[in-house]
Length: 153
Image 1 (cartoon, helix red, strand yellow):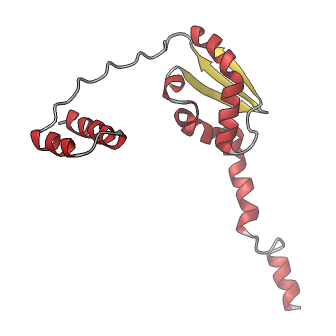
Image 2: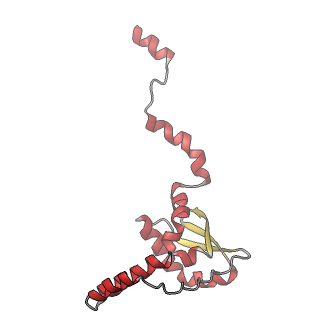
Image 3: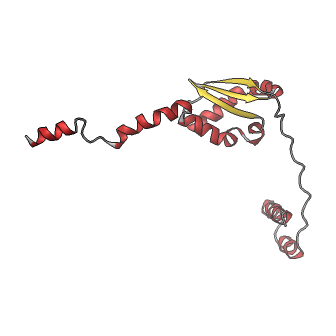
């Protein structure tokens, strides 16, 4: 009889936490899916900084990714669409995007590349150390690294 009283007080009984999570997260995921949120966060890493500067993912729904871009860029993106879809799906390891839909928005022209920084002069001690190395790829790579380090000083 003690069991019947406990069943009457708590008709549903204890529930596993895993069974409660979908009910709590469903409203948030209706607005933005987890995959869509990840796509927005990783967008520059997926398609590269040049295209990320002139595009913005808007919505992912039923395999269609809506991208906002400036007018001139839309034509280029249409030609790159199969490659972009492949990059996105490779990044996620599954078929997430099947089609791209382009929405034009005013402004945000393609970004211009910054001018390269002037070559840094290396301190005499570093130049002397580099001179002791044999000619080749290693020496060139170390010299390039040194110029990058001393360019910021």
